[in-house]
Length: 349
Image (cartoon, rainbow, N blue to C red; front, side, top):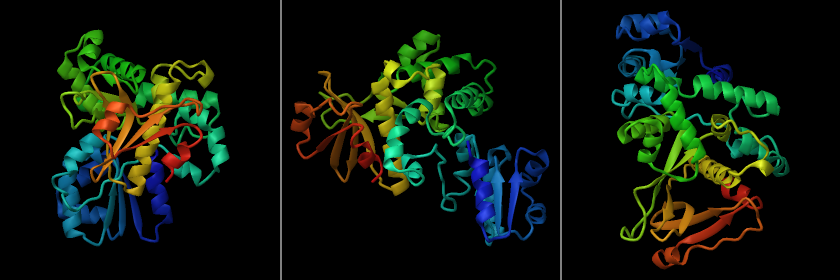
């Protein structure tokens, strides 16, 4: 969502002689998949910047990009692909050490903060938790935002997986997504999801992996250095966009009417923190923590052997303390409660 708009803006602002190539068009795909240096040279000409949009549609795109890189070194190439996992599989080996990957995620709070002040962000917080921050959705009125999100979740959200797996009936994949949406922020059981849908555990895990690779969801793993007392094999699932998550369960109610506000807030804070870490190139390991006695912490970051622990509370009146078992095991760790009063300091740093 927004890739084509972005690359066309890059071309518009670039001082280089540029060419845009749409690989939805068969004639473009045929030339770029030819592995013929003469054909590729003739097609690309003397342009300094070439954008290959929907590059995953080109057969053996990795090999052909390598040909361009080797024989036309003066040419800068930007290749985009909506089927991210498919594109990555096709380019990773041929272009090892020659390419940089960029994830195009929904707007981050850091980006939004460049346009509006902190007060306006606070005023728009309910909209962000309800409708997310897809570029096409952000700033729209509620009715329009809901319509766009329902269209995305019904027609475009998992089309890459359907094409990749050649699924004739998407019903089971949609059902998995809906169950994941209902359990967002909670630990999931692949076997339990499978039993509800009528799929085996391996198949459910496969689809969850694909949903993660296409940036619909992401997951946190359990953290432990004390395996006998702490849970490590569980996963917690979150969505890259809350508007999509809410569309899947058809719930765009205002926050005061929702039973899942805690899960929304946790998903939002973790999601925006991860975006901020990516943007600022803060390389940390991320986890959640729970022991077999039911004590838990929402979110952990580990860097250079040090742990920072965070608990998320929508209301600033709700207090929380780090579990004694956690502090006893990790005495040098830090602990902080994130609420509506301090979330911007946590996210925009």
